Image 1 (cartoon, rainbow, N blue to C red):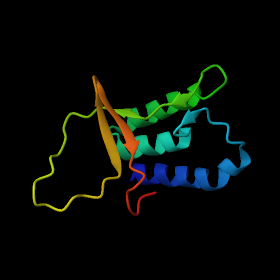
Image 2 (image 1 turned 120 degrees about the vertical axis):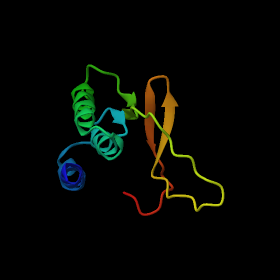
Image 3 (image 1 turned 180 degrees about the vertical axis):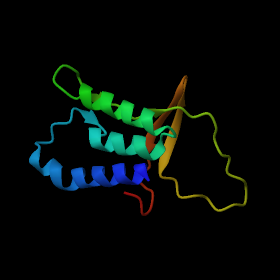
Image 4 (image 1 turned 90 degrees about the vertical axis):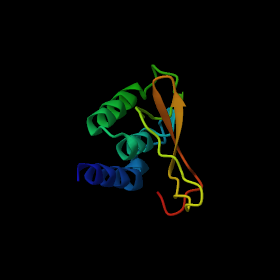
Length: 112
């Protein structure tokens, strides 16, 4: 329930309120897209909100910016069994030493 409300408010922000700004985000993906990915993929909604808030606070002239994909904790992966239909992959999870980076699959069908 709370994920849908947050995602809906982010979609509204991206569609209507970013027109008032000047494209001033210093990161890729943008802060609103980062927050959307965190909310969609992070199992703990409070960690997702905390990470998104920290990212927004870093989006200013004191920080260089650059590429900063969301990082989540990932303790398990589901194996795809041979002979089964492949799922529609929305996000790629790239393992790191203490979690996974989340990267959006730009070729996924029907996802925004």
